[in-house]
Image (cartoon, rainbow, N blue to C red; front, side, top):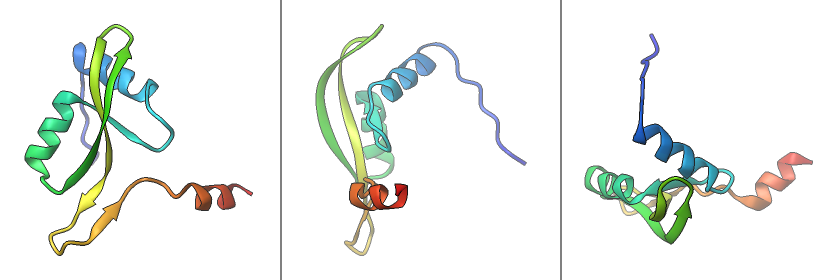
Length: 90
């Protein structure tokens, strides 16, 4: 059984803008999403992307999700390895 979700209004607009203003294979978050993630997953490694003009939203402070720090102190990177991606494309 697959869960189904219906999102309406500002949530859909914001997520669409985050996707369209992102980079390939990157997770781009709003200020609110970053704050919630840090509250719920303190090991999340995020980078402040700064203030960006987002169509229909105005200037927004946005963030990249870079990975997660595991409880044992090891880090899990989620940023794709560009060299590996290029070699797979050949």
